[in-house]
Length: 120
Image 1: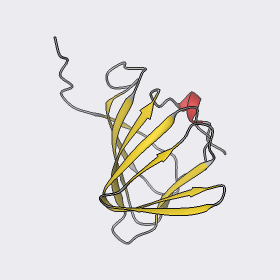
Image 2: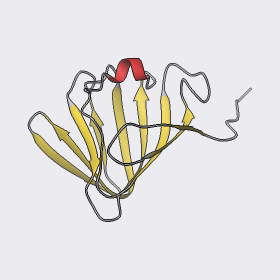
Image 3: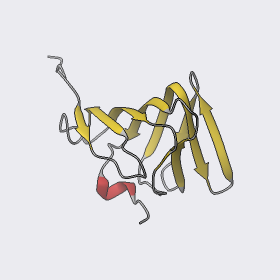
Image 4: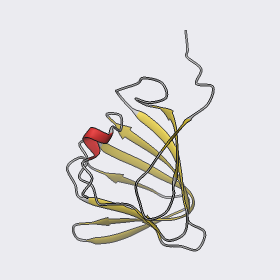
């Protein structure tokens, strides 16, 4: 029988400004370890600490611009575009545009604070 997920769980995010993370499927909201699916809303000027995660992250930008900084530079991902950050790659996410960013992130395996490996 299919499992309905009635609502997401809000998860706190590190960064210089508050970012909304609504996890629909994942370790916190549904007890799912294989994959996590979350909607993110980051304000203009938001910047999170760099990370070298132990999961692949597939991101679809719904509104605004998401900047993905990597070892060789920056990629600005616009609404209607997607990006894949591969496990073991150093990345840093930010939202430099005036409208911020809204996006869906899918992590395989599911996101975990223990496996994101954020720098302090």
